[in-house]
Image 1: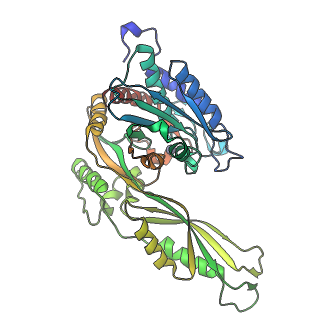
Image 2: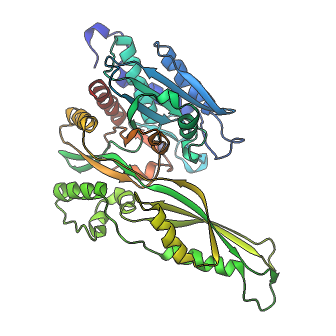
Image 3: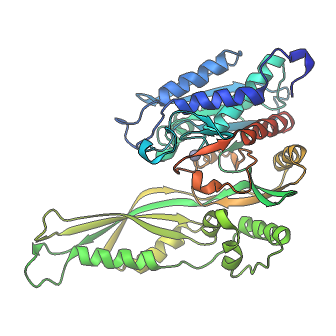
Length: 442
Ligand SMILES: [Zn+2]
């Protein structure tokens, strides 16, 4: 990517390390509360400055004090084609320094890795994109399509102050965007020395967070009492927690399993894929969650004194629905909890699913193969949700494609929100090369 003519300029593969380190050093912890979340403004200003420095004109959009988003458009040479949205969030989940080997906001370079909260989720991608477009601006490269860059706040707490704010209040920024790429896709899964699957996210489950409310008769804890809200709630929560919803293999998961079956040489029963999924090692947790609706109890609240039976009790359940199954899941849950427990939705965002075909998928696949001849791109479904949920509301076809070549022994999925989150420097540099190719050719 460096030519002799530009040998005095920093190579994007070098600059990405610096950019990522700088971003990791800005603490952008999202606590879910505007009063205690901090640093997004500083990170947004950093990004805006790095874009402006090379002649791109970014605008910072604040949704609330300090909750800052950066958006910029790079004009393409073929303006009649739809624009491509490239989005990454700047916030991170909290990290407790006592649990880490290095300080989570040190951006330390050690053993070939950049360490820090956000190294994988997702300041790595933020830095890669910055490195690529800065290099282009310095060397006069223009992409074929318009590229809209969006660096968002608040992804880690539901995107209300980030992607959802932009998509509802500033939708004009995304005029003409037909497709988009963002996080949790394009990473490698090693088959053997010469072959790697690259999981491109073409689907993600829906978010169906709900609260159960049980009502009973308040009373004294010492007496006989047959209408206890805590007992009723606990029984409902236990039923949900123990329940396994039926297996439903969607098109995306079917395509993924077919590839895996062929490449790994393992038998996959499409009606009962769990045995095969269990053999996938560190990604089994993600893939296993994409063959059925799930419901995990996460919070309980009841009572105010040890010897008083409260009149109410509530619990939060983190439910995730397969594409098209949100209403079905609601019916399944109502049946499980019974008529006396009320269900209140606190967050409901639809699942997404697109097909693994077309020019954009071709361009992703070609860029991966050019940089890794052993690359085998496969579609997959993410069990979580991303900013893509907000942007897809604008009719944008969203993919998870933040390319990263990973060492075979790295437990990638455990690094998301995990202790000692870190990104391999050579993986980061690989990502820059793939993105550079992809964005020039898509
Ligand atoms: Zn993320």
